[in-house]
Image (cartoon, rainbow, N blue to C red; front, side, top):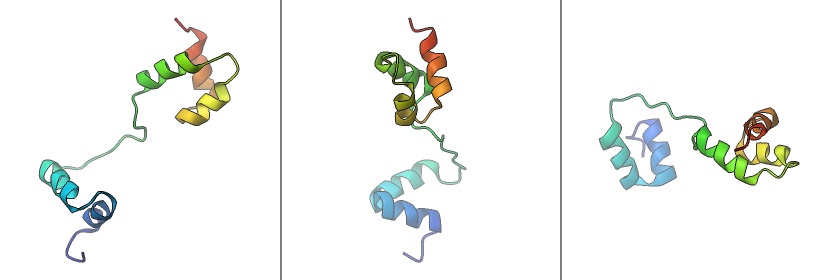
Length: 79
């Protein structure tokens, strides 16, 4: 494993050698910057509007990693 650069060693440990090779083949030479959040905010906004019951803003904020204020602003004009 010492022959691989550190980021590739981490990938190999995390997802395995074959998956690391796929990532390497697709993106080698490029600088990747991954968003902090996995889901788009539009998707989270939809989910919050579906799950909001009038008193669970704090719970939804924790669940989805947004602030309580953000949650309230999104459900304020629920359609």
